[in-house]
Image (cartoon, rainbow, N blue to C red; front, side, top):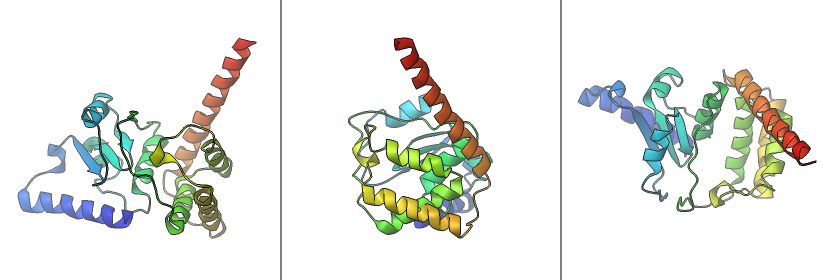
Length: 204
């Protein structure tokens, strides 16, 4: 499905340009939203006010046109995890996507699909996520409070790891930004750890 979505968006953009003479630069944002998502009224306005190139969640993703043109070369990614690809690319440039946190953000919970979770694991490898960070993310997700659509089962995590290992053993080619992404993720994690250390040190 994500591959078809990416292909459809690119075709739609081409049709708008060729048939209606409307250029992509005439717009400020591209908003990709799933049909089964219920969004708060201020969702888009809040993300725009943050002035971030990328914001939201995968099911309701806001992308600034300048970022889309410069970073994505004016083409929506054809990927099994298209939103993750965009988030990873943004992070690789030192730009952390903005989030919207609210109780009235209703997204259907993810139903387990082993093929999808395996494909996600392959994508994690291609982004440049290190093995240590992969394990840390999966372990922490079991303890950190997550919203319903963010929660994954143990089975999903196992298939993520299986996909990652498959990609590693087959030496699947990583995305061009993988080194920058890995550096930024590792740095971000180190900063979080240091904050915790200083916090607990200050309590003693």
